[in-house]
Length: 299
Ligand code: GUN
Image: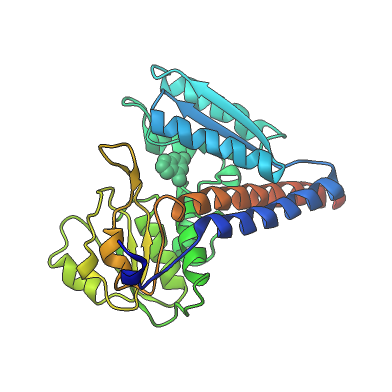
């Protein structure tokens, strides 16, 4: 692809993530100065999925960068649900831990819903607990899933006004598609959630001012589906045969038509981790300030 053909501005997720990590670091330092406590994130990895191991390592690195304490728990793939729930109960009770993240997917035999529901909603920095999901849908969010939060920040960073825009979210997962659609709705976009059974998907994408692609299939959203001047957010992280990372959108084709597009890598991925840092600081602020206020009030 020559630069001549490229029309879209590429949204720099790495730079935006740096800015947000900086803001999280400042708030973490303020907490430390005020209360002498450092926000802490516990990350639980069960089994040895190589992609999950990479993600977990980058989360620990981000904690270090932002000045958060990080506690990593790596359990064998044959861990029982009772053992995992016991660890989560300990983390729920720990004063040093303000955020708990259990890396998904879990190995077969572990009930993901039961595990997620065992995490204290106050420490649920993934925002996957039904309490936090319910708060999001009800319009009074507390802890919101990280990737969708990052998606909204990436769109806002372009300077476009989301209000009144037609947005199409391709993918309906609890982790990305559904919460991203709710957040776009809260920003007053008109939102369609499309999925594997959607009829005439390309027509729906062609009508969209904002496209969020989260299907997990390399190049699934074709370049000629993109409306001229659209904002394209590519959530996909797919490995090619020659071991490169590539998104769910045909980048070269889409970049000829879009006004703004996120690259893979360097778009959504870094923002997800930055938002995890922000959520951990937010959870810590609520827990630490709440505790201190309660103590002060003699409760
Ligand atoms: N696996 C893929 N994305 C995520 C995420 O955002 N959180 C967790 N816990 N696991 C994931």
